[in-house]
Length: 207
Image (cartoon, rainbow, N blue to C red; front, side, top):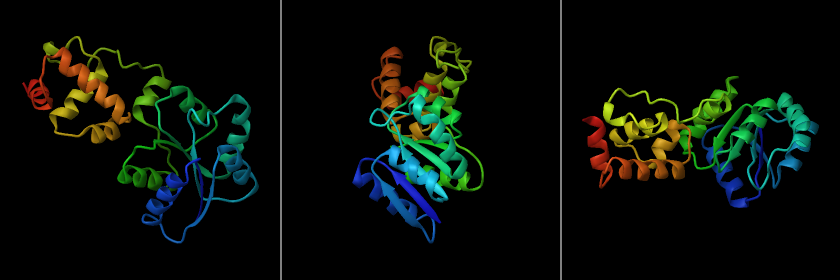
C-alpha cells in the first residue's frame, strides 16, 4: 500500500506515519511539505491513500479545485485540519474528497476513518455537515427538560456528554468538533446554569 502525506510540519508527518504503520501492513510512504506538491504527485503517480493538510496555512482555493478533483478521482484522499471551517469542508465535498478529520483526533478515530475509507465509504464530521447543509447549532433544542429551553441543540449535546463523564477530547471526537470548542461550550453552560464545576453540570442534566 502506498500512502502520501502532505503537511508543513516534519514532526506531524512522522507522527502520522508512525500511527499508520501500527494500523496497516506493507506501507510505502511518500511525504511532502505542501498540498500543491501533493496534488502533482497524486495526478502523476499512483497512491492508495493520501492525507492532505489544509487550513489557514494551506487553504483550498477555487483555482485548486479542478486539480484536487482530478487527484481525488485517482486516490482516496483524507483532508486534515486544525480548525472548524465549513467553507473548507464545502470545497472538500465539491472536489470529491473522501474524508475530513481534525488533527486533534485520537488514534482510534483516525483508524476508524481509515478503515471506513479503504472500504469505499466517506467520513465527514457531523457538526460541519450540519453547517454545510444549513443546519445551525442555534436550532431548537432536542431535550424536553424545560430548564434547558434556552439552550441550543449543540449545548444540550455537550451537556449530555458531560453527564456521561466524558472528557473534552472525548466529547470533541463524539460530536465532530474541536476540544477548544467543547471548552467554550462547557464554560458557557456552567455560567448559564450557575454550576460551579463539571460534576454540578452533570447532575443538573441528570435531574
